[in-house]
Image (tube, rainbow, N blue to C red; front, side):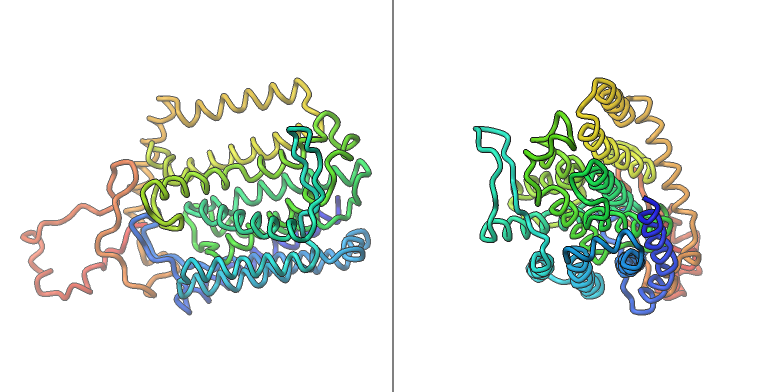
Length: 436
């Protein structure tokens, strides 16, 4: 465990120190997230933070390869190296998309290619247990395992991309998911089913470190976004962890590791850990398909947008998403470790009730609406001059309306009260700054 802690801290430190450098480079090369009607931010913000996260991941893997115990995870398989190579490819694809805006087909092709590289290094679904109709465990050959692995990877990559809509949301949810996967993988090693120094445990440890190192720069108000370079990298690594930890073992041999849940465990853990991103992805695809739109057509109806629409502040909406991700992820892991004791079930049930009350109770909603209005007022007063993107892009003349009926636009001054504006060119009017 101490070596994993060293690896996590190394990944977090490198990511934390590299992010400001990446932010300066993003501003210099105009890798900026412009303000769109469906966005929550109101000032063009640098993106491409996935580059710093990848550097942190690479540093964590390098440190692990030099530690006595974790060296074993490199001796018997190439999965970690494969994830590092595939992660570099998909991160590069994301950088190109952050800068030039690639079309959906090009990104999908790149995602499939990166997943294929990962498969070549041995990350592949080998077993699938179906707990119904007495089917039992299916041993998947390459003709089924390879496309299934690629499909899972592409789904996870796009699911993480879909929830990357609020400051700190994707990084925090990904860190929670990575820690949950690490706890599950490490437990399997402790009980003797797998080696403690395993590929999935190492992958999730470095990923958790990279996300935690990036989060201080990305939490509201974000100074940089992870962009597609980060969300796709995180999605690929989480899918690799799910395949390595659960998809390469026969679940019917897990009796000693999971007590009362040996058969449903390989299905329960990945679904629970990635439940929030997958549900958001599914709802978005269904919603857009019913409207006759492309599944990749953007809108403002994601889960985090709905939390904002009922009045929750930006930070509160993010924290609520953290709560649900942690409850589902660690609840599933706790069930797998304890075998589903009554005490664990009672705690999970109580937390479920608390979570629903916080989201939907009238008093909580009134407080959330007041907090959201205060937050919008503070965003209006924040000066554009304090933003790192100052002077790199032309500010919007009319910021988008805030979710929930409030407005982001500053109080308009009648033209008659400002005769000097008639003599000034339009480009010189934003001297007061654009609200954040």
